[in-house]
Amino acid sequence: MNNTAEKLVATSKVALQAAQVLATKAQASAEKLVELNMTASKAALSESFEYAQSALTAKDPQAFAAMTTDMVKPLAEKSAAYAQEFQKIVSGAGEEFTKAAQANLADVQKGFTTLMESATKNAPAGSESAVAFFNQAMAAGQNAFKTAQTTAQQAVDAAQASFTAASKQASDAVKKATKTA
Image (cartoon, rainbow, N blue to C red; front, side):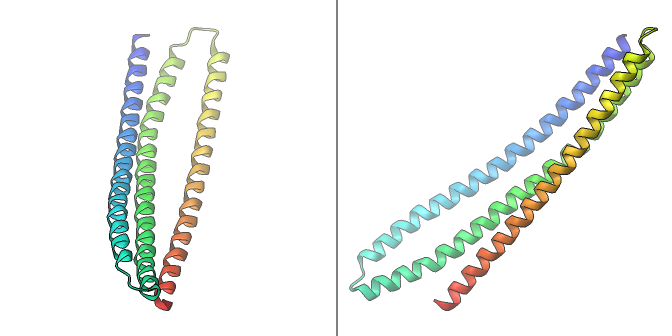
């Protein structure tokens, strides 16, 4: 019995370490997004005051219209660059998170399988059907988790492809608008 308890504690430690790795990666990605947003907001605030100052110096409506047009081009380009950087951070985080989760999940599953084998060997006589039922339930749960993991990865891949396509369209639109203006 003590051996089974030790294995349970060891498996729990591995699971806790895996959770810590994932939480650390999530926090690092959140910090990158906060930094990106702070940088973008500082630049937007500074530039908006610069444009307001410039607008006040316009002598006539044509000069004001020219300033407005000159303001739109860099704004569109910066918006596209922001979207691309945002997408890069999010997709990188997703990839790191998935890799870490998959690597740690394998360790946790291995520990749990070892624990279940030990528990099965040490089960009291007459409990074979209950142990068999429990093992079948665990196998079904692992299969369901693998299916959910595969489905989630497919959804992430589809979202990534859609975001990449939208970013490309936005970038192409900015380039086209910049050329014509």
